[in-house]
Image (cartoon, rainbow, N blue to C red; front, top):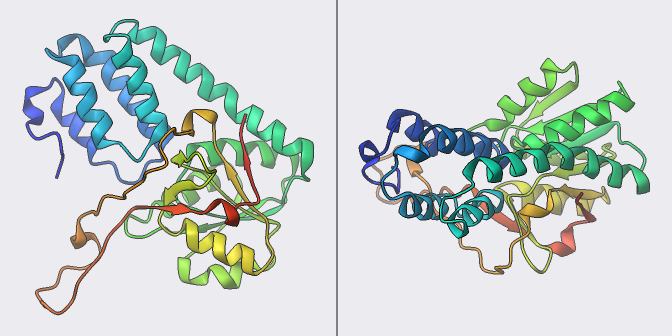
Length: 267
């Protein structure tokens, strides 16, 4: 259920509900959808600042979104188009810069394992593919929303070879990978990161098998806060049962300790 309770108070509320209920897009893609919504509707929202604060609370796991909303709040809702334009221009340029910074110090990998659905990884994997057509990406399906299927389809449309696996198969398919690569929804001051559940499992397994574990993320994912408490999501996504002796837990996000990360590559 949306934490913005009365959606019908806002213009184009059906589209807004789709954005709020989107549990499969990465943070950069969600930001783009929010920007488009604001570009079209901000002038018709009576108390824009209150609305922006509600959005910020709702998307608190996504640093790139909260940072963008902070800029809008600080501007008093002014210069909306310029702030959106600056943000989108930054995103477009940062993918190439992250790729370049990785390429300075590392060989381009041909066999990568990853998790979830990330616009940042999608754009950078396309750049990898331009260098080597032998690229193969092993994608964890990422329960409970299975956004790994979405990411696999997007990569396959680019001609990139994909193996879609369950998280339980990570140990089997990581051993001959050149590296593990994930994105990040938030980078904490101690260089630990927040990302989709399963990222920590991937990091621990990579460390066990001495496979380098990289995080690709733009600097607008950096957070000043070292405090992260994940929200519990709808348990029906895991299983619907009337058995009172079964307790179900459903968290989307978790932290990965900096000690498990080989390198955070930024622009």
